[in-house]
Image (tube, rainbow, N blue to C red; front, side, top):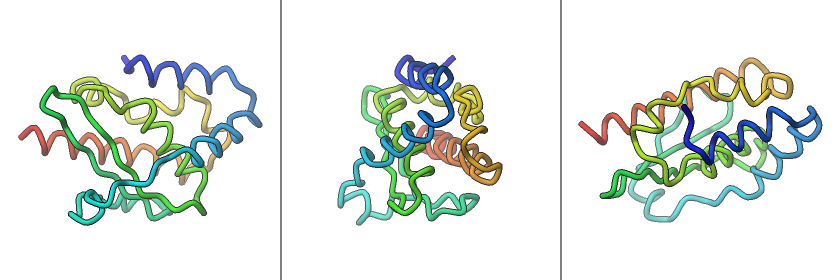
Length: 140
């Protein structure tokens, strides 16, 4: 089961034609906020080495158990930056348990396989795996 905000995005993408999916990824890429200076400066961002694109992610768990995600992805990689934007919109404010329950390949239900390469799809799975690993480490 996906958090409600991510479920809405999955359904929106799934029901959209291919060209709209591409444009939506670009839109999410443009809207992705840069990580705060303290997240960058403290070295919290972890590189997802399985991605072709230099993709960095950090997770922060609040006292109430909700999660904040931070991404650093170059603007020259709109597909992966757009995926980061989707994760940011769909997962920020979710609980650790909600995020840990998400299948790594949830993006397949969005129909992203028709607009991105297999290599990028593998990177997307690795991003979710990295997020989950960071959350498990924070809980330990």
